[in-house]
Image (tube, rainbow, N blue to C red):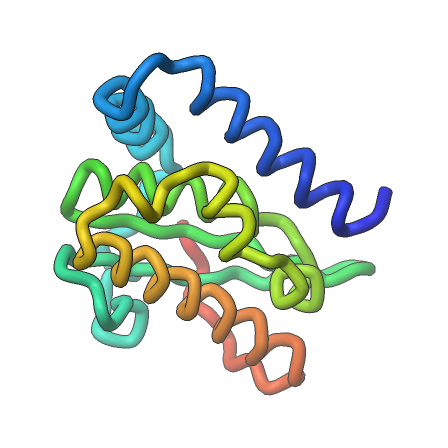
Length: 155
């Protein structure tokens, strides 16, 4: 399966789940529910180094390198805001378990446009969403460049 096909499959599944719901109030409840299902993040990983800059809410994202072949990245993340946790769950649904190169190749703007998220988020929350994307992409770029420092183990 090509990367584009894998990405489309993940995004298509999210789109199906979103369009099944009648309105954005229900979709926000769905986002909150997704956030509740996130893998718990150990408190010791919630540091200044793992904190996402540019988010109004508190958000932390760490990666764990899974040796390959191919080498993939696993992400653990958390937030103090319910909807933001749901946005994290959407991003991890798209990015988690991929190679750094595949992460960098994903057209996330297109994927998020297909979900219709950006137009239903406040400007601050939309900026925070893209700050989370940039954090994930920076972690992937660091690993792709071979300059990864040992990440803390998420548990």
